[in-house]
Amino acid sequence: MRSMMPAQDLAYLTARCHANRVRLIDTAYISNYLAKAKSLDEFVNYMYATYYGEKLTQLGKEISEDALLRLFLDVFEERLQMILSGLPRPYDEFMRSYILKFDIKNLLRILSETIRGIPHAPAESYRYKFSMLNYEQLLKAGNMKELLEVLPKALFGEALELAMNLWEKYKSFYAIELSFWSTYYKKLIEKLKEIPGEDAAIIWAIIGTEIDLMNISIALGPMKYGFAVDYLDKMLIEKSYRVAVKKLKELYALEGRSVVEVVPQVYSEIIE
Image (cartoon, rainbow, N blue to C red; front, side, top):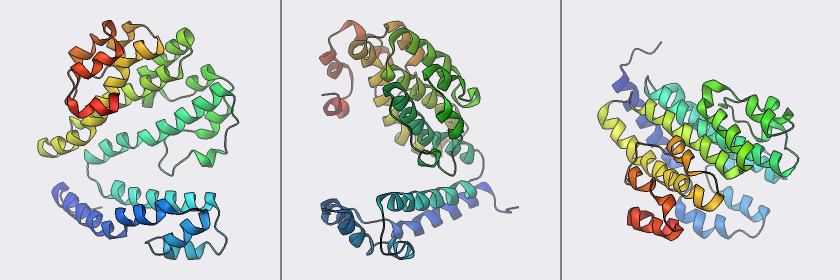
């Protein structure tokens, strides 16, 4: 059992994270070399000059795309586990809620494959070491309804009923996607309330932009994808960062391009 107090835990963990920064690939190196690689072999050769060089050597001479992706994931999972194991409460609970986003992305990938009739990859292709979903069970589902029924209510709550309703009425993958992200961010905000003030403000500055963009996407839903405006009240995330949710609720009565008139200019290029 750790004897350090939470503040000391955070200071120690912060120091470890800063130490790990030297292992990150420099952005200039990514732009000047990795991004310009014309083949997998050339990309791998450039990677030998990075932190991954020793790990690549252990893989042998012939390195496949799958092996390279698995290596990246292993390092990512290793670093994330270091953070999770060092966080005191309530920071650890917030972080575990935050990383559910990786499972949601893979869940949406499976949902999309199911809708389009595309064969699924093996479960290992979707799962992380920290995953909270049973991917074997998800991949056995034969249709959208079965898929939604096997998802854990503890993780997704109201999103499941909402997603089922939207699918039955509109057969819109986009609407289902929004329902999951809406529920995700609402739960994340609840977890953020347990974080002390100054730290919560720093985190809010990071996730607030994500929430603003999600709210804009939700508000555009009735215009772009045809689902009823009644769903806006269920899906919009009331706590916003820069975007006035009250104004977004009025957008369905306007033309799509009017969105730029009611959101901060910082988001205008994204909307356009």
